[in-house]
Amino acid sequence: MLQDISQFIFREAKLLDDRDYEAWLGLFEPDGLYVVPLAGEADGGRQAAIVRDNQAAREERVHHLQNHWFPAQQPPSRTLHFVSNVLGQESDGIWRVSTSQMIYETREGDWTQVGLGELRSIVARIDYQLRITPDGLRIREKRVLLLNAASWQQNLAFIY
Image 1 (cartoon, rainbow, N blue to C red):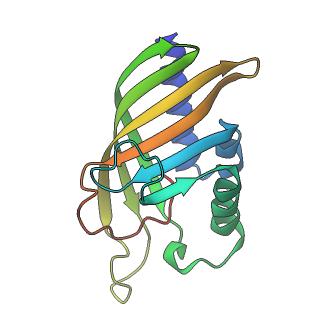
Image 2 (cartoon, one colour):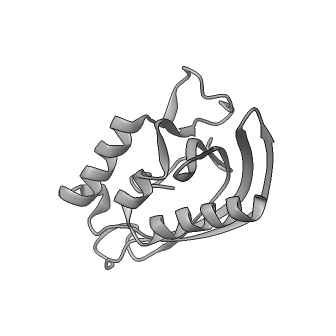
């Protein structure tokens, strides 16, 4: 089963790299969460977070990335996800999976646009809660624990 889970997570990474956000939305359960907590906020709960998206917020995020002139994403980010150290354990029908990920991000531009044209690396432990459904695996929760969450973050407008 862990091989299937690894393939699911690799596919999610490719969907994000390809900016196939509609397909990415379909990976979540309707009540699923996408969370990027502040440093030291591992449980997420009701504490402040950089991102805490339920289904409506995920759909709105995707809508803005695809349909609006979004200054933080003009030009849009190009990303490449590297996923490793996929470890998982099942309990009560939920697979709790931990991964190490390095995400490279760049936005094309020239010297007149600060930060554009630079290659940036984001390192995170990304934890998933996955459920097996009749339609396959679905994300109950995706929690992105940025290695440098306590540091200044340049542009967080793309999806990790």
